[in-house]
Image (tube, rainbow, N blue to C red; front, side, top):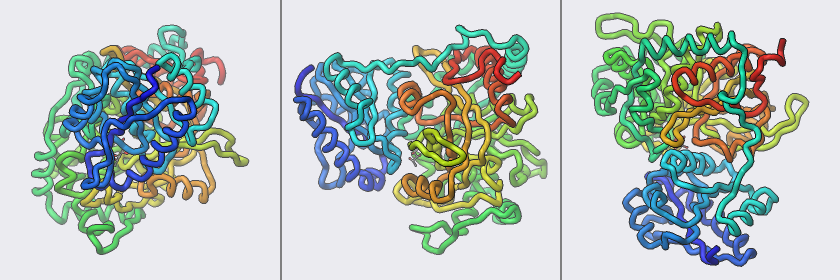
Length: 540
Ligand SMILES: C[C@H](O)[C@@H](O)[C@@H](O)C(=O)CO
């Protein structure tokens, strides 16, 4: 391989995020350069630090296109990430790059860099761009060194996928298959509407499902606008907003209110969020939506506080009642599954899972999380690699220890959310899980799924993990059965992962099989990851 390797770093659109994260990115690039020098390779940054902006990231699609004009198309190229990044900043350039591409991140939770890497990988996969990927805590471990040697000598890294079994290659019990297929056939026949409040959040190309692929599942998009949502918020009365807030306070939910609008959560911000909650349900009802996604970024973030509290409430079956202007209760007694950051892949999954779980007699509340980071943890209750699943919004209080009373709302970090607003935060209760992810590859919908557990960690460890990441956001301590950290990182084609609880371990395995059959019936090719009891013999 050419001894000179180009490096690009895609960043956020929000200048405050790019400035806050620059130091970490710079340190990471220096550590990487030192390792590559040892192997006789030299890094050439394709874009310089910008002293006026005070960061060295590609911060727009236009800038990315201009930077790629200066890169030799046949040269080896590393996309190095230690921050949350917008994939479309570099996607255009990467689609026409001919040399070997390596996407790489430091395995750290400080900023959502791993989340950015996984989004980029999912986006490149959907765009049919060939790439290799690597991650490392200090760039000195065997896994990383073997990977980088392989890339430097062959221009590629092949991560084994021995933990994956495709649905087409196994035989699940006929009774499970029938339940899943019958359920999905009905869903497909009856059809469903996915309300999309402004498509394409934060450059997440992988999160946009092409309409023709979606239509084949029986789901159709209703393209809605966040401008309409804002206009509708203006029509919600103060007393309707107060009723929502009082309902939450009566349930015991806590709000970390202060008085400084710029740095603290204020009651006024929370009340605006309550108006958004009411407006979202009224609009969803008006358009007959079965699920909705509000992106918040690009547009709404410049007008009002964050949508995160709203998203968590919508995803919970027990939630403040909302009425239309004629007094009819909307979606009475039901959640309105919400896909955070308008991640349409999660939207398909969230809707199907909510309804299927109810059919199976289990609570249907589910959510996406970011696959944020993780570390091995050993105690008398767990000895495993424990992931930090964490997301700014969308986690339903039903997932939290103590429900509403165990949940609180903390001001969103100013670097991402200048108008504040609170989260709906809690610690996910211990229990058995089914995890999944729908993604696009070769212009087809696929889904990986498996089983795992939300585990209990000591309070100090929860606090440590929160402080290493975003203490404002809901957290789940998750272990994945039969899938190692590196298998997960190598295979997962998205920044998000969907999770739902099952009543016990046997139910998790059975529901995972049934869900796979349902997805197959919708035309989504499924793949069991890890030690799923596909034959249904382990728990008899
Ligand atoms: C606020 C941040 O940009 C987050 O939205 C980001 O880390 C994500 O959640 C990406 O999925």
